[in-house]
Image (cartoon, rainbow, N blue to C red):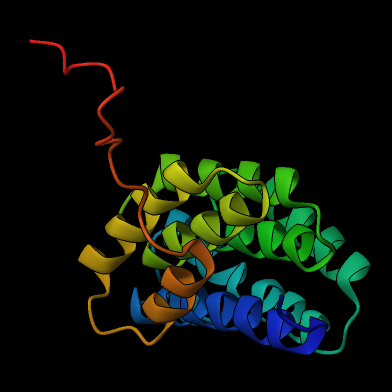
Length: 172
């Protein structure tokens, strides 16, 4: 299994990617001339960054509180949901981590980081088939990612259909 520092680095990579997407989406700190909805979303980038910094410092409790504050202001903040899930995952609370990642994906099913993180949480929960589905979606969204091999190694080989002579015949 992965050491705590490696696990923290992997989850942090997710958070940084989500925050980078927020900046790429045109959210600029300190600008009030944008439409209200976009300006308010831009105001949430700083707390997301602060929460990611808290995770880097190992302060998961404060990071989680900050993500929850962001979600109180914007319940549809995919970045906050992925960050919140990451704080749970770093504390081995994979059930709550998976729930946060699933909610993020219900809002943005194109979010590669959330698919990757959900697959990882599901692996730890023993839900390997569900994890495989999210790994496949992650591969579609980010086919050159170096993180694909990590998940494939954690999952192991795909189960093969039972070809024994006593196996039930396929349904037709």
